[in-house]
Amino acid sequence: YSLRRAQPIRTSDDKITTDPKTGLPVGLASGGRQCPADIDPVLQKKMEEATRKAHKALGCRDYSLYDFRVDEAGEIYFLEACLYCSFSPKSVIVSMANQHADPSFHHPKLYHALLDRAAARKRTYDPLQAAQTHGMKAQPQAPRAPTSAGGSNVVGSAKALLGTAVLNTTAAV
Image (cartoon, rainbow, N blue to C red; front, side):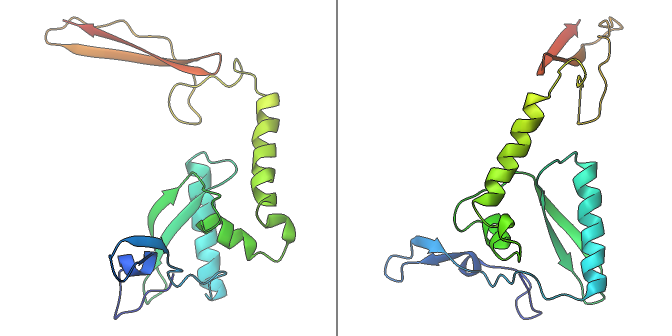
């Protein structure tokens, strides 16, 4: 979406269409999407680097979508990450995928490719090798004993047990 100085924030009119008689939402507006975006190569490289770093830092595997704002000097500002995708006919990912020059990226082929990748990981998943406590890269830790140094302390430990996160919490008084 390209925003202009006269309208720096998208409104509901940019996102939905309404029935003129009732004012009730009846559909999605195009919102002025331009895909692919018409940006210069320097800005494109900055945004690609930022998205790759965020994708890796967040532990994403198959999909992630990032929302940036760019000021007049070409500085990018990260707004949000969308780590789940919708494959409804009018979703952003479907719209972007269908604009790709390579037909293997078009919907529903992209959707099937993502499902196949996830299924392949599941077939090779070994929970004893992939144990973690918090986040994508954490390693299991031995549970800590509760303290009794006055007040109410809560000691928690989490561990992966056959691929299922288990949280053990003990309150000490």
